[in-house]
Structures are given as C-alpha cells and as structure tokens.
Image 1 (spheres, rainbow, N blue to C red):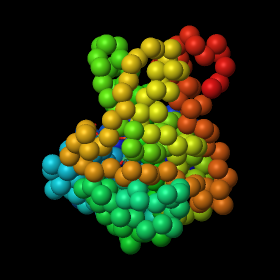
Image 2 (image 1 turned 45 degrees about the vertical axis):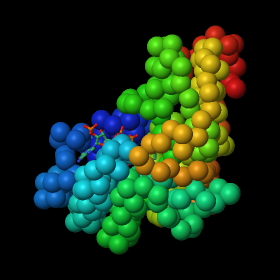
Image 3 (image 1 turned 180 degrees about the vertical axis):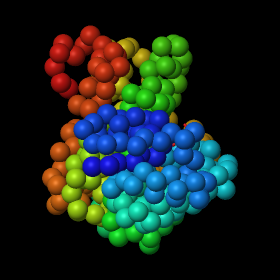
Image 4 (image 1 turned 180 degrees about the horizontal axis):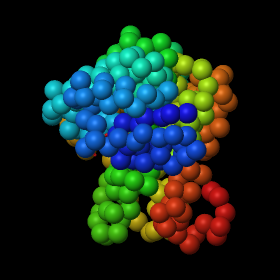
Amino acid sequence: MRILITGANGQLGMDLQNALKGHTLYPFSRAELDITAGWQTIETITKSQPEVVIHAAAYTNVDGCESDPDLAYRINAVGTRNVAVGCQQCGAAMVYVSTDFVFDGKKKEPYLEFDEPNPLSVYGRSKLAGERYVQSLLNKFFIVRTSWLYGKHGKNFVRTMLDLARQGKQFKVVDDQVGSPTYSFDLAKTIRHLVETPFYGIYHVSNRGAVSWYGFAKKIFELAGMDVSLEPTTSDELGRPARRPAYSVFRRFALETSIGDEMRPWEEALWEYLKEIGMDGISMDGKTP
Ligand SMILES: NC(=O)c1ccc[n+]([C@@H]2O[C@H](COP(=O)([O-])OP(=O)(O)OC[C@H]3O[C@@H](n4cnc5c(N)ncnc54)[C@H](OP(=O)(O)O)[C@@H]3O)[C@@H](O)[C@H]2O)c1
C-alpha cells in the first residue's frame, strides 16, 4: 500500500514509519510539508498518489495552544482541512489522529466513540474542529483518538519524570486527572491494522487500564528501579493555563467490534518502553509487571 505520513518526525510519526515497514511510505517532516500551506499540501499529497494518508502532524503543546489559539486552529483545524482536501482530490483514505481532550471528563465510566465531545481547552477544540473537517469532507476516514502518548522519539511525560528524578529534584504530580497512558508504538501497530481494512469511522485507541498522572509517575519509578520521593497535588494547585479533563478513559468499542481489541495493559507497554530506552531498572528481574 502507498502510505503518506504527515508529521513524520514527531513521536508517533517515527513509530508509524517503523510499524508500517513493508508498505511503500512517503514520510514528510514539517520542513518538507507544512500543512498550513494549503496549495502546497494539496499538491504534495496528490503528486505522491497515496492510497492512505496518516495525518500525525499537530500542534501538541496544550498550554501553548491556550496562549496562541490562532496558531492552534491554523495547524490543528485548517491544516487538517488542507490534508483532507488533498485526500479528497486523489481518493486516498485518511487517518486523523485526535485526542481524549475532546471530552470534558465529566463522565464516570469509559468514553465511547458515540459520546458527545465537549472540549475544555483550545487544544481540544482545535483538534475537534479538525475531526469535523475530516468528517464533512471525506467518506473514507479513520479518526483515531488516543491519550497520554509516549514513545522513543520526542518529549513526553515518561522522559520528563525520568529527567526530573535524575536531577534529584523534588516535585509534585497531579492526582486528580485519570486517563490511559499509551505507548506510541502500540498505537502505530493498531493504525497499521486499521488501514488494512475498510472499517472506517471513529476509534478510541489507548493502552488498557487507567491511572492518574501521579500513579503513572510512581509506576515509572518503580519499574525503573528508582527511589524517588513524590508528592501528589491537584490541578488547581498546579494552575496550568489549559484545563484538562479529570477523567478521559476510553472504551475501545469500535476496535472491539471491528478488528478486535489487542491493546495491552498500560503497565506492560510502559515496561517494554523502559526496556527499549534502557531504563527498565534492576527490580523487574526479567518479569513483566
Ligand atoms: N502527545 C500526546 O500525549 C497526545 C495525546 C493525544 C493525542 N495526540 C495526538 O497524536 C498525534 C501525534 O502526536 P505526537 O505526540 O507524535 O506529537 P509530536 O511529537 O509533537 O509530533 C507532531 C509533529 O507535527 C509536526 N508539525 C507541527 N506543526 C506542523 C505543521 N504546520 N506542518 C507539518 N508538521 C507540523 C511537528 O513538527 P515540529 O516538531 O517541527 O514542530 C511534529 O513533528 C497528534 O495529532 C496529537 O494531537 C497526542
């Protein structure tokens, strides 16, 4: 299959390139394809004649989006529109990677793909606007919402925690936001399975299980064999510019009913990730958690 990837040098973009080996890939970094340039985006996509476009480019700085909404909408909404029009013109199916932050977090049980979004932040609203462009412009699309992503390439919560711990800093982590950490390689493999099918629609894809950021941090240090004194805090005390959902756990209903839900528990995925980056510690004794 001929597959074009936007944001190919990002955290997910790099794992997609690995997970999609065997297909003919057209990976475009931001320098090679800036999705905010409308005509250039359409031309680049149509020239490559892809059967599938995986749109992994985004402005992912959640607090940055809050302070610069124009930039957030320009990249996440209008940029996504440009990619969707490119797909429309060459008949490619599109995968748009979206987020758990489209939900307000008021639900007390896992969110279904059929639940109504109600984003709390500019980031969430701009990503939802991107979803709406995709839905209104195309009929062959996968909207893949994911959450709390970390991977080998790029900045993420796991790396931040390990860096802070190595610096011997005292720090607090929020305990009143619950979600599902997701290893970007597991997400990339699931996207590979999806694009090999015609089961278009909205998908929730996260690793299995749920935890707070504080619980996630504790597990990182436990699996890394690091003794770190960590304190829980609240979102109010931390006072970050963008509001985040208090609860954004997914039910992977569309996966369950289409290709099967093979997402593994988040602790197992985290353990493999720590091994991959050489941080699995000595406490695990070769066993999975
Ligand atoms: N990270 C998470 O926790 C998380 C959670 C839920 C959903 N998601 C979604 O998952 C997807 C992948 O996220 P990620 O973690 O891989 O993010 P990432 O590492 O920040 O990668 C995003 C990539 O998009 C590129 N980009 C930014 N503006 C662009 C533009 N105008 N034109 C072309 N490329 C542009 C970035 O390039 P530069 O680095 O050069 O700016 C970067 O390479 C995104 O759609 C994101 O919204 C992420």
